[in-house]
Length: 177
Image 1 (cartoon, rainbow, N blue to C red):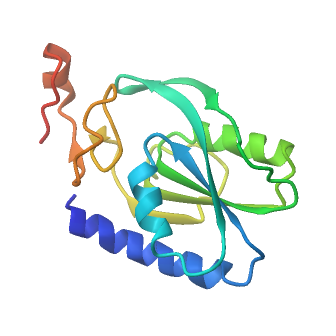
Image 2: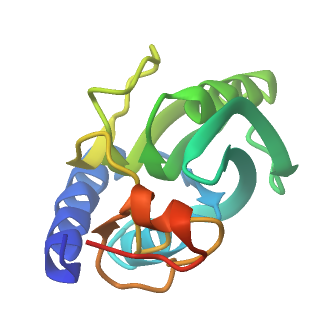
């Protein structure tokens, strides 16, 4: 997926958020680190209403597979009590991270929670929480680039690539298709 295709998808999702959230009193955008940092930055440049931003860091992947367990590496740095929160994710795969985030935010008193994700794998998503703003839908491939990584490698690519898992398991470097 090229950078220009990604930017077009970011434009489209930003327009929807601007339309839906323009009258909400100072919503909080919550970026999920580390993978969402490029998407979060590009998205926020297109938001045209007053808002606040903060980050949380969760981890569930090791190599190319989810461990099935979500760990909170960096907690909430702002209060969400009584607030509208827009969670900005890089990718929604199984939905485990979204489920954990939903519990964290509800337990912390968020009034309203919306979910925005650059990428959604609808064929792999088993969660029950609605993804309000999916920018792009993709098949169940492991991808790198535009903030997404394989063992911390590949985040810097401006395009998104499918990882060749067979080649990657043979050696340490990323072989992208």
